[in-house]
Structure formats: structure tokens, C-alpha cells
Amino acid sequence: MFKLLEPNKIFSVTSKAPKYVLFLFIVVLSIGLTEALILSPEDYKQSHAVRIMYVHVPAAWIALGIFSSITFLSILGYIFKIKNFFLIAKSLAPSGFVFNIIALVTGSIWGKPTWGTWWAWDARITSMLILALFYLIYLLAWRIYENNEQLYKITSIITILGIINIPIIKYSVDWWNTLHQPASINILSKSSIHSSMLFPLFIMTAAFALFSLLIFLMKYNTELIKIKNKGLDRL
Amino acid sequence: MINDIFLMNGYGIYVLSSFVFTLISFLSLYFVVKVQYVRERNKFIAKFGNLKSERAAFAKSQIINKEILSNSSNF
Amino acid sequence: MYGRKVKLRFFFIILVSITLILSVLLILKSLEENVIYFKSPSDIKTLSEANKNKIRVGGMVKKNSIFIKEKKLNFIITDFENEINVSFSGEVPNLFSEGKGVVAEGYLKDKSFFLATKILAKHDENYMPPEVKAALEEK
Image 1 (cartoon, each protein chain N blue to C red):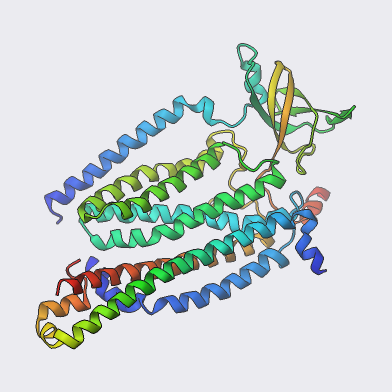
Image 2 (image 1 turned 180 degrees about the vertical axis):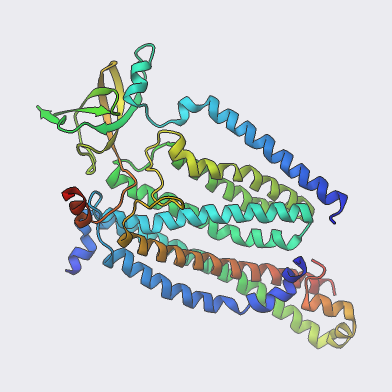
């Protein structure tokens, strides 16, 4: 089953894909931006500041999603010794980290006019900052260690330590008193965001997901070429 | 009308700065990754080019090397 | 189907994860006091002694409780069980209003009076256009 995921078979696809993904991303992003900045209504309470949500929330979702995928891939890669999974995990990390930073910064910009402060050490915000640190540690580990065996072990441990933080981020707003508002969108219950605001939110999420796919593909191709280069050196 | 879009009841500075920050992060990440990609690809082209002129025939005659070129069985 | 090593690594990961999750939960449980961002008026009532340190109190601004006297803003924070009087002078965020969430940072004078040095507005999870809000209120 995992044979299908071998790099040489994938590369023929991934090397051509980025330009189509880039095109699709630009189209979806333009729709998303017009919706988010111009067409969507203002909020009854926070007025136009609600528009910051359209970058803040998707960025946070994707940062969490990517870290979970990295952990999943690293654990599977560790148990079954599949090196390609580590390569995919490594290529996913940069966009996850950037989305995490975007979530923190735009949240801070939103906090100033609505809460009245740039930063609060509440459980949600602090745990999100910790996730950013885990991303950073993960990315640095790939730069520091040369030996592959070492790399696989160390990055697996980092992701397992980091994944514990994910449910804490998710439920921090329910478990403790936080300044951050509870989740508006729930799989099981009706969302407390009006439908006219949900549409731009989902379009922006799609655009951001496409962007992380684009970065992933480019990064993954770079890694594959690096391996080819090592192979050529050995000739 | 245009002014309304940018001012947003006084929230414009906050809204636009967060969108601009997002787009700038996107652009920087894209270009950093692009530069890395192009650098590796150029290295590959240079190496493969050298190989071709000197030992391509020899290299290609060996099945093992073919695998390395098409790659990854050994990574 | 899978080798012995694979099984061993699988159980190793499971064990490591369980151990880590349990220890993190334990740490969080013991740190609960510091993890929460603000106390509710009911928490204040159950305090054994008046705390002299800077604390935060949060809840709803009680309806019709805001009044301003000589640049001093007075209002009541309620969690619908207990209440606390808050006095504050300075700028409040735009979202500060009656019937909405608020977090006040400052010092307790006694168990029913709070001197705030900073007011933060707490937003709730509801987002809707003004027309929808108006329609909801008409109902």
C-alpha cells in the first residue's frame, strides 16, 4: 500500500502540480478577498472589525490541522519506518508555522479595538504561542541534525510533545475562563456565525488551504531534488 | 463610497493592516521556498549536465545508476 | 502481519503518549488557579480572605447599572448569581456596554467592591449583521 507513495512515482505529478495550484489559489483568494473586505456585512457589535476574523480563523484552523498531520505522519513513519512520511511532514511545516504566526498577529490586531488590549496571557492565546514555539523547534531540528535516524527520532518526539497542546488549544475556551471567545463553529450544533459571514470564512479557508498545498508541493519537490543531487554525487 | 470601504468606521486601519500582513507573509514564504527550489534545481541541472558530457554513457549502462537518476529507491 | 519491531515501536509510542498526556493533565490541574484568566463574582465571594494582589474579575455588565459621576465610571459585574461593584476611571473599549461581557483588572477593596485599573471587553461567539440582530430583537 505504501509502495504507491514512493517519491519517484509521486515526483512526476508533484513537479507539474504547483502552477495549477497557484492559479487556483489566486482565483479563490480574489473571490475570498472581495467577499471578506467588501461584500460581506458588518457585525452588529464589532462593526467592520469582524473582517479580521476572515484571515484569523482560517489561519488558526490550518496551523492546527498541519501540526496534527505532521504528528500523524511522524508517528506512522516512526512505527513503520517509512522515510517518505518524514519528508512530507518536513515539507508541511513551513506553511503551518507561517499560518500560526498570522493567527497570532491578526488576533492581536483584532484584540486592540475590540478587547482593548494587544495581548492577554489567557489560556487560548498562550497555548497558541506554545504551538508556534513547537513549530519553530521542529523546523530548527531539521536544520541542526544531519543524521537521518537521529532526525526521525527527534522530530517524532517533538511532534508528540506538541500534539498534546492541540486539544488544550481547542478546549481552553471551554475549560477555563478566557478572554478569548468560545468556538462559534461546531460540527454538532448550529453555528453562531450568521450565514452571510460563513460564506467568506469558508472561501478564505479554501484559499489558505490551497496556499499551504502550494508551499507543500514546492517544498516537497525541493526535497526530492536534493535527494537526487545526493544520488548524483555518488555516481 | 471608496472612502467608506477603506475607513470602515475607524476600523479600517486594523482590518487592512491584518490583511496586508497576511499577504506579505504569503509572498515572503512563497519567494523563500521558490528560491530554495530554483537553487536545488540548478544544482541538479549542472550536475546532470556534467555527467552527460563525461560519463553519461557509462552511467546509463548501469541499471543501479539508472535507479539513482530516476531516484529515490536509495534515499 | 507486521514484524515484532513494528509492534514494539507501536506500543512504545502509545506508552510515551499516555504518560505525557497524564503528566500534562496533572500539571494543568494543579496550575488551574493560574491558567484561568479571570475570576467570576461567585469565585470572589468564596475567597477566604480579601486578596491584596492585582486580580481580574469577569462577567456580564448588569443591565442599567452603568452610571458616570465626576469622570468615574461605576457599574456592576454579574454572573447571574453574585454581583460585584466596579469603579473605574479611564478609557473603555468600544465594545464595552450593558449586557455584554467584560473583564476588569485591578484590586479588591472588599468582597463586593472592586477598583479597576483596566477594562477589557469580552466578545461573545455570536456574529451577525445589524439587520439580523434587529430582527431577532423584534421577536
